[in-house]
Amino acid sequence: MQSTATLGPAVSVLPNKLQINQIKLPLNRAAGKDGSFAEHIFYADSSVCNHLSSLFNVCLMHGKIPQECMQTVIVPICKNKNGNMSDAGNKRPVSLATIISIVVLV
View 1 (spheres, rainbow, N blue to C red):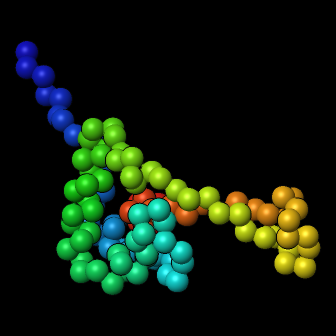
View 2 (cartoon, rainbow, N blue to C red):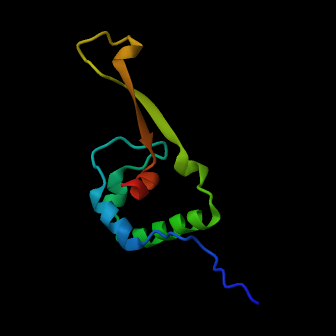
View 3 (cartoon, rainbow, N blue to C red):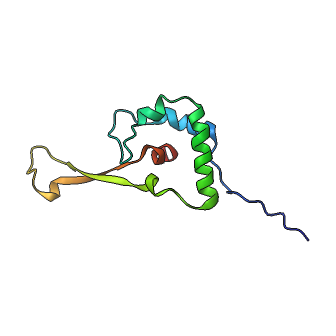
């Protein structure tokens, strides 16, 4: 008896879902480690969503994400500007992720 198993992810990322996420991107934010801003994706042609969809689906199929997509920068942000700026308790960490990973998460 032949196997009827199919290759590929049980879940897939569709280009139209990415187009919706493209609209929801938070603008005027700092760039991640890759230097890309949300505006690069927000103002890009909708065909970019087709390419990103292919990339994400290949990642799902193989169970691997490129190391560059997972890199973040952690920046300490002051909680209370009137407090002691050198006190570590007066800081909170903010993680700046790459815009490619944010597109999937939005």
